[in-house]
Structures are given as structure tokens and as C-alpha cells.
Length: 330
Image 1 (spheres, rainbow, N blue to C red):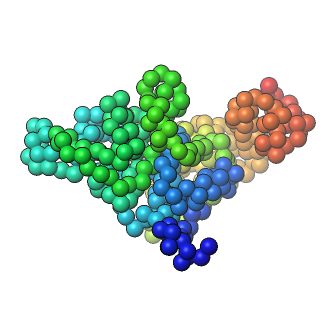
Image 2: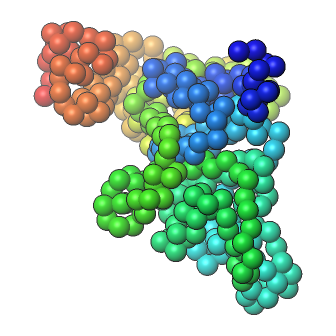
């Protein structure tokens, strides 16, 4: 089908953006994320993005918007966990004049700001039951009312949402509406934490170093092999956001004349990677530390099924057993 046929059907052709430079990673998991982003961008189906804090859920949402037919319309994001519940309804839906003390004039909400574009609800799992009911009506009927008004308004927006919570567990505990979940999660994109994809670390480091050096106007910087060893051994509980902050910190503090050594890393990273070898280029210590951490995470991820784990990470069963024995991992 050529572009003329697509326009005749009312569907805009996919936009071209450098997705690999925005959703960075060489791991199979991140390649799958990019494939899903491209596939869902051309439609208006609601997408639920799952992942721990700092994994880049809003980056994925923005990429979906920028690749789709609404790219030239607003992208409006709201963090449901960052706004007090008493204010959130007014922020989302707006309010009429006199709706509450201090409401001297009517005010549109964020849903109306997103008209024609994309409305991104981050941390949807933090919504109260009352707001979940109002959001269900908005997603299902494309209708809402401002606080203090009886007039029903229509909304032409695409819905994207994200959460770090386990919504299945929230539904089981009656803290999240099952009907709302199925409305929001027509397609689900799961972003794995950085500790489960260590092969992405090098690409992320290069990206953050290049961007940081350009912003600071300093010559292109690199970490020493010892510093990279320490970074590779750290579990990154704050995920990509924490890595970005660490690179910015190192660029701000270290001299521009030499590579960034391990002495410029944060104390928590040096302590957590204590079996590294400073700025000495100790390949065997770095490899041993990486193997132990990687195998623990892989076994946990695949339910401690050694046969499945070996197949998923590209080893034979005998090869996996050999490495487990070498590191005394049961």
C-alpha cells in the first residue's frame, strides 16, 4: 500500500524518528520494546507501560506519540502520584467557577489540554477508587465533567498509561478496578530493569557521556576500564535514571584532561562493587563479579529452572552447571 492509499483510508503513514537513539539498548528485551512501539504507534489503542521507577516509561510513551498520527498535536503527561488527591481531579478534568473555595474562574484540565493529541497518565496505580471510576468513564465513553459542572464534555485523545505497581496484585486486593485495567491495557509494554539487561550498559554510558559533554562544552569523555568494571557490578536500583545522574555527576566533578576514574564514582557504587579492582585493569575479577550477578538474576527471572535459564541466556545446560560450580552458586 502506498502513501496515497493510506491517506485515503484516513490513516497517516508512520513517522520516521531515530527510535534507537531514544530507546537505547542492544538487549533482546529492548529490541522487543522498540518493535512494539513501532507497531502500536500507528493505531489509537490504549497502551499500558510497565516498569520500575527510572526505566524510561515516559520516554516510551513519547516515542509512541511521536511516531503516530497525533504527533503534531499535544502530548500531555501527568504523574498521578505527585499531585495530592484533593487536587488531582481538578488537574485532570478542570473545574467550573465557584466549584470550590478559590475557584474564581473556570479552568480547563489536562484532558482538554491534550485535545487531539496524547494523554499520558504516569503512575496510574496510585489513583484513588473514586478517580478510577471517573477515568474509566473517560477512557470508555470519551466523556468527562469538570469539577462543579453538570455539563458533559467530549474528549478526543489517545490514552497511554504507566505504573511501577503490580496491577494484578492490586486488583486481587481490590485496590484497582479490573474493568479499568482491561481498558487501559489493550496492549502492554514491559520495560525490564537495567540489572536484567547488563549488555545495555555500554550503549547507555556512551549516550549519556556524549550528551553530557555537549551540554557542558567539554571534550568527549570516557570512563577508565576500572570505573566501567565498578559500574557493571552495581545493581542500579534507580535504573537508567540513576545511571544518567551518575554520569552527570562524574562529568561535573572530574577534570576534563583525563578519563574518568573509579575515584570519581559515588561512594555507594564503589562500596557495592567492592570486588572490583579500582582502576587496575583486572579482567578476571570483573568477569567473575559480572557472571555471579548475571546468573543470580537470570535464575531468579526464569524461576530457578536451570534448563530454561541455560537456553534463554545462550548456554548449554552443562555449560551453565560448570559456571555455577565455578562460583559455588547453588
